Image (cartoon, rainbow, N blue to C red; front, side, top):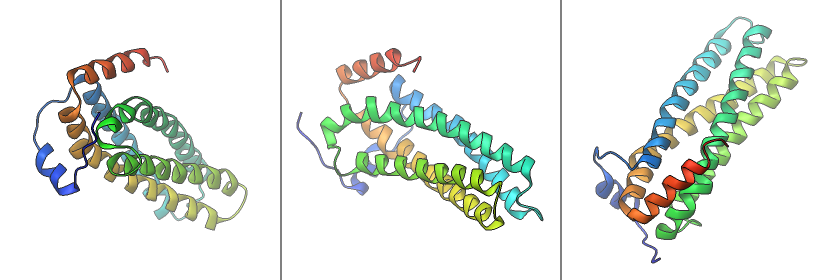
Length: 184
């Protein structure tokens, strides 16, 4: 496959539009909505906890930790689906070491790392300092910012670009990969 390299502005001009995506790409986009709702819940709870007179309130902190832990598992599953199914096929067209896919994978790592830091600091902070809780909440806020921007870029650039570039055979292969991985 011949690789095509697109500048960011070129991608935005070529791939704008409300065209419905092929089913596997539409599934990824719909997962963003579900994940986005959970991100909003996490952000709201973190803000509430950060503004509280007693930010280390064990009950709310435990709730936030549980939600973030569950969210991280769901997010990891979504990211693996992109990294193991979509990106290898799309990478045949645009490359994977640089450009949009490399950026998406970097953001995946960053978001997961900040959520993991939040979880570790909360676990440690339950026994220790208020400062650790504040730092933990900071990591959660960073992950929220990364993910909101990340989903926007995927929905408005990467997924439409993939739908445009992938052949019908690639889309059928992607559909089979998604069907095979339903129970993962």
